[in-house]
Each structure stands twice: as structure tokens, then as C-alpha cells.
Image (cartoon, rainbow, N blue to C red; front, side, top):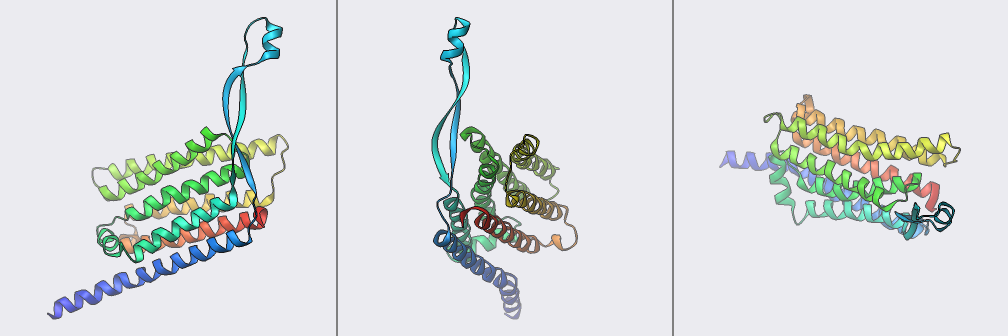
Length: 267
């Protein structure tokens, strides 16, 4: 009987604080989303598709059909709504982990797995990458879709790595580095646009560079946290510690991202 009480107290201590964190984060994300939609504006970015089409003038001069790359505007993306959706996704998942799915969430945490986090990151981080792409001038629908898809793959590989667990047949190392490569490719695309703007004279606002640098550093911190966990280094031997680090980094990244954009564009 006494042993059961002690185990219950340990369980409450172990997960009670984490549950309060989930409630607090859900509230913070919801409040920030409401603030953005109330005080933001309707700044939109165009999304186009590229395709091959017959060029009448060149075809006339050449005497035969000449194909050229053409673009067509398909729709606009309101950056304010993107930020609000990111906050609402985070609010929804943390709210579910704190209430409806709390028991399932805590059981999987004891096994070193948090599928809720990785699914949420697939959506929210994918949208963040798309938003950064729009800010630096990526307007091609196929490129934006590929950036989103690679970010989803990165996070799904993170989930697979947790499912296999540290040190099992080296599979976690392979999955980790495969996910890292998938996640870095969208940043390479964004970097190409930034560097091209600098080289060819385009003038981007300073906040865009601030977003790029701050998010790139924070994303690096995510990868470092993941690596420390799977290498079981010091405090990261405890999965709960890495979980709290994930939560703090996620809040910091989304908050910095949203309010830098707010200050630079949508206010």
C-alpha cells in the first residue's frame, strides 16, 4: 500500500508540472493568435505556377514553335492568417495533451515517444518554413510545396527515431541525419533567395534577415536537443528534460517568428 502511494506521488510530481506547462503554453498560443488577428492587417503574398508555353514572338522570328517558361498567378497567401493558423495548431495540440489525450500522452512519454509533438511540428513548422520562403521571394507553388513536404519528412523521421529508440542497430543515427538533411534543404532554398537578393541588388527589410538568423539558430537548437537526447548526454538521459526543452524552444521560435513579422509587415 505504502509503495503504491509513493509511486503515485512520484507520478504526480513527474507529470504534474508538465501538464501545467501544456495548459500554460496552450493559453499563450491562443492569446498570441488572437492578438495577431485583432491587430494585424491583410498583407498578402502572391503564389504562382510555372509551366512551358508557346512564345508567339520568338516562334514567329524562328519560323517554328519555340517554348518558353511562363508563370501564372493562382492565389495569394495572407501572412497574418498563416501566423494565426500556426498559433491555433499549437494551441490545439497542447490543449489536447493537457486534457483529452493526457493519459495517452503521459504513457508514451514514459516510453520516450511523443507523437503529438512531431505531428504538430509537421504542420506548424512546415507553415513557418513556407512563410519564411514567401518573405524572401519564393512564390512558386511547387517550390513552396516541396519546402513544406521536406519539413514534414524531417519531423516524421524524428518520430520514427523516437519509436526505434536510442542505440538500436544504429537506425536512430541514420534516421536523425536523414531528417537533418531533409530539414536543411528548405533553408538552402531560402539562403539562395537571400544571397541572390544581396548580389543582384534587391533590398530586403532588416527584419527578414533577423527572422532568418534567429529561426535558423533556433532550428539548430532543436536538432542539438534531439542529438543530446539520443546520445543520452547528462540531463538528456531523462526524456522529460528533453521534452521541456522542446516545449521552451518551440514557444520561443514561434513567438519570435510571429512578432518579428508583425513588427516588420503586418502592423
